Image 1: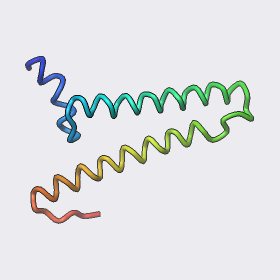
Image 2: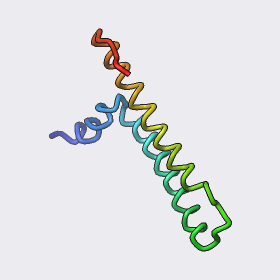
Image 3: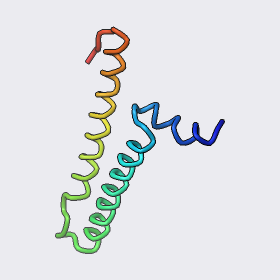
Length: 85
């Protein structure tokens, strides 16, 4: 496998270029860092960040599902199939 393919194969499977995938994955990384930080503080100070960590994770999950649904809809639309929801 060529070096270029190693950088572009996975992003292409999710409908992104390398740059788009970099930005998306970096955003997820930042959100996970924020969630981890809030959970660590909450462990020491139970009154702080009571819902922040779980809200971050829920938001990330929603972004993943929304993006996956959008990609699947685009694939279905381009193939002429009817989407089943």
